[in-house]
Amino acid sequence: MKKPVFPLFVALFAIGASAVAQLPAQNPIQPPFSITISAPQPMVKPGEDVLLHVTLKNVSNHDIWMGSMFSVECDYRIQVSSNNGLATSDSRCDGSRVAGYMKPGDQKEQDGDLTKISKFDPQGPDLVNVSKTFDFTSPGTYEIQLSRGVPESPTDEIVASNKITITVLPGDVPAHPHPFTIMLTTPHNSIKLGDPVQVHVILKNTSDHEIIVPSSPEPGGLQSHYALAVIGPKVRLFSEGGGNGLNPKTIKPGEQAAEDGTLNSSMDFSAPGQYKIQFFRGDGGDFREWAVKSNIVTITLTE
Image (cartoon, rainbow, N blue to C red; front, side, top):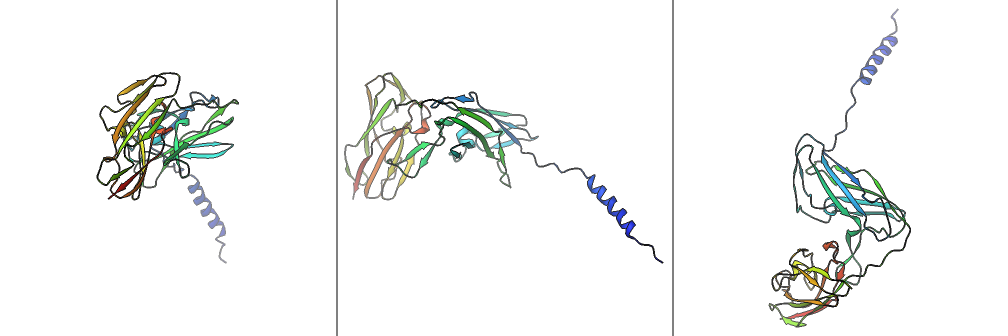
């Protein structure tokens, strides 16, 4: 009579299970860098700046190529969660303006103001409609987290920061009138194709204090310190401008600064028809806010 093999099978199964149980746990792949955020002022009043300090650190044992290290707004996807829901700001800066390698242990410190981040709206009265991405005017708590992708990751790996909480205290939202206005005119409302598209810009100080604004060192250089939108038969373009600190000029209360320029070099006016033009400019905070808007002028190009 054969002896049953069941006890032997049980013993072998137990030995195999024990061996499997003793295998070392597989460590998950660690991201090559860490993101740590903090708030210099975790409690603010409505209308005050919401400041953020970001530390990006290479925690790997090799150099890391960071595609962009320009600003908090450009480099990170920002999420703000509150009672009003979830708001997200994706990086607006395509292509790295400032980039480079980070060696093991290196870290990059950056500061940002979440109230200065803006977004484009599809609807509105202007050629380019910009509004605040994050609204911190309502009292309550706001949870903030940043993230960014790992450069050259084959799996599109995302690294997230810690989460922090900002508390907005009860209070009235202060009014912040812009310190200047922009008036846009053109000497010719109808011109022939190929002729210069000329504009005249008047910036007037409407505040009760002196303001310092950048201006162009050369005639026709308006695009160096104004953002510009043009909508025409074959064109719908927006030029962000730049040079916020270029050739600063002081304007006293009630005074104005006038500039003339041509737009042909930066915009396409090659087709006949109507073109709508509008200028934008920051009000002394973040130049990319385009907070102050001119009126809209219309120019007709004929053959």
